Length: 153
Image (cartoon, rainbow, N blue to C red; front, side):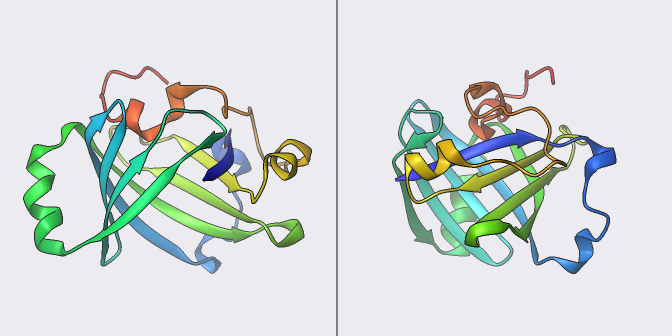
């Protein structure tokens, strides 16, 4: 079960020292968006993921892929291939912030996600000052929606 909250970040509020945090280059495409079935390359690792419907809480299953399988499936994806850099930033209470900085066509979009072990933990979370508007309950900012390529942000 994936339990996460998602926030917009403005460029002027991005942490100054991003290069000091671990990062990975992510590229992902969608074979289906209802239900969500995606392929992802994360640095040199490859995955096929299924996600159920939902906003803050939804089922998620990740299966490893080979590079060959990823490359075979990539032309079969619909819409835009999402490309972004994800920074992993330590947060209070042992939590982690995953800060995504998107490449074109969504250059200028900055999203922070925090995953939780329970709904109670997620609901009680107080985000840091540098976080902007919460968009957890908006499917507009799901990567599967962005992949359709017609999103006005």
